[in-house]
Length: 538
Image (tube, rainbow, N blue to C red; front, side):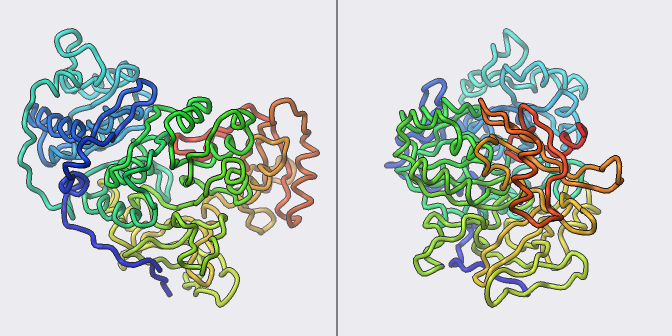
């Protein structure tokens, strides 16, 4: 049986992202700081932001961009990213956001698949962007370099060129329920990256779903280090914060010193992170050198957060840690621990930080046995059996671009999206993610979740970071758990000590059988461990 959200239903307006975020802005909000570029110490007010979005949209329209066109956006976090992103949507076009770490071939591949006719980037990424558009035959004046030299000097328009034209935003008409707002690319529940079709209604729905659970207000200063080109940063940071009229303190990339300085100097009150940042906050000695008392809430997402790690961050900083779960295909949030820790649902108790919280409003979930296909009921006590997590709600994607087969594999005829993640649920409907269905290690017929072993390894005082993957043992020919470990600076923990530590705390079949020490765990920009990169080392 499915279990519905325990939170009150929300009203989702039938409107565009732009109108939802800015249509009702009041005079009193217009002069609030919206975006603060921390590195440049530059502030954009809501009045300036809306004006620049409109002007950017008008400039795109003047260059032939219209409803149904796709524009690529390749940039690290900045106020310019926010203006370009919302300018693209305001013009009626679709934004395909591109990972700032992509190679020219990667960029060209995504632009080709998305059928993009224009690319917006920044000067540091311009060489790779230029190589990509040259492969595709896109004209130089359709490569916009936001902080570049400008059209006359380089052949590529910059932000000043576009905004200086003072073109009015175009009058556009489309159905928010079906018109694509963004096309991020995701591996989803299968291997190859696919265009995730998210409509205006998808994005508006998800902000509506999470806003009551975030506790974010106009008085909050939100530290924005997670990339806006990733759906987590796009929805949970950029769009939700702007709807709340909060201030976004923007960092183009993570640097621990700058991260801590921004909290201290700009009195940041909320932060959104991935688990690797939590590791640094819990373990790095630099943290003790800063006053972080302004921070009242930190939310972790993009990958499972171990409860002990989360509590260590809470204790060290003096804030509340919460966790959420989602995926690009869900716009992205489907489950979350609310800002009060779940006390409103648990008679004053906090949700277990090892959980990912409850189903967001206007949605429902179910667990399904991946072998039998049977639905797993809510337990009367404790945790349920493990099953694949399925989800249905207005934030579920329209499908994968030009890939009906993959869409049908992921979204069933009843509208439930099959996440590919294994989970358990408690009697209240609170969800606990176990691991990716395809990342489970099969050892002698037993299933070993890598995330469980990684959380255990991170509790060791001499381990700074860790990842676990399944590798084939040369002698037995079977899959075994192998740990990749980053030592804490100044320590000399041995492989035998690591294996002995794990063996003392898990069932025999879950023991780590091999250990390799490396300098850094490879991770995506959203904080997910790149297990395929580790497997190629073995």
